[in-house]
Image 1 (cartoon, rainbow, N blue to C red):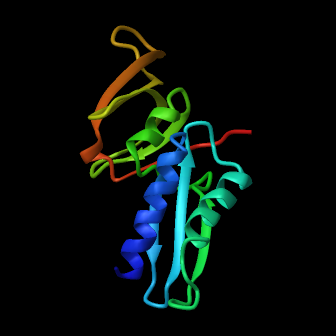
Image 2 (image 1 turned 135 degrees about the vertical axis):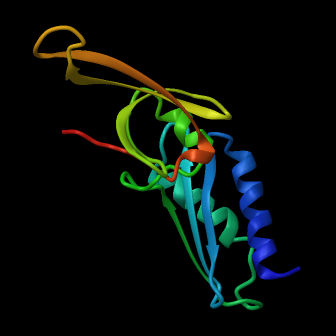
Length: 154
């Protein structure tokens, strides 16, 4: 069995034991540098990263293959890549880029096919002078999303 397949199998097994965690990205370079990015339904702790690292590393033979392993959580400014990430961030503000526009809105809903964004905007009144606040909603399929990032406000 090749090294990449072995790592993938060990990682799948470790994540199967921790159903609250899920894989965001797995990269294995030609020099056998393993980079694992995980996320969790309730976030990721340092201990979670250590546990996943050990579950993979302790089942590999360093005598057979020289490797390095890094396990990290998805960073605050990292783009959302997984449907489960969208679901865990319902209620938070996202900056979403599509092919034609960029929207900053609240993630109102997320299901397996699409997300629902809601936001308010000041627009000219239909009758008379001045502006009024108008509520907007948009249902956006995942296929149309080029990038989505959770925005953090302090």
